[in-house]
Amino acid sequence: MIDLKELAKKYFETFSHKDLAGLALMFHTDVSLFDWEISAEGIHDVLEANKKIFDSVNTIKVVPMDLYQDGNVVVAELNIIVNEQEVIAVADVLTFEDDKIIMVRAYKG
Image (tube, rainbow, N blue to C red; front, side, top):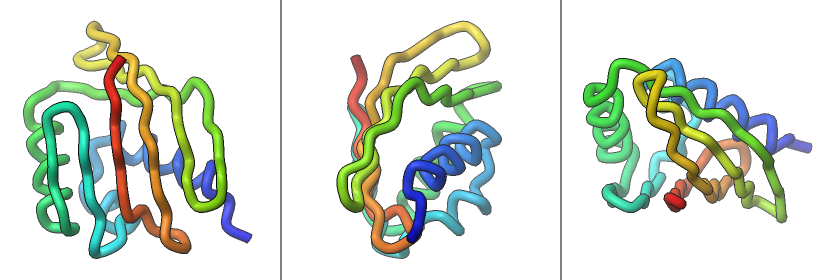
């Protein structure tokens, strides 16, 4: 059985390293991304949205506080640390299809 919480942790670590190639391996080709500023569908557009995020900051670190799983969904309470100064509280809802992320929904607050 696939440990989706561990895959979620790997996703946050990969994101923190600004590793687009690593993210591409974790995403389903039909992945969707929605947050308070971004809406992207399909792996190309989602990777491009992530690249824009990475290019807009010097550093970004995702710190998972708590993870909850129900079926193929992992909900993560996170602190995102931008440029080693700004801390943003976020809840990510990751939906998996097998071992690939097919949807990321992020909520600020």
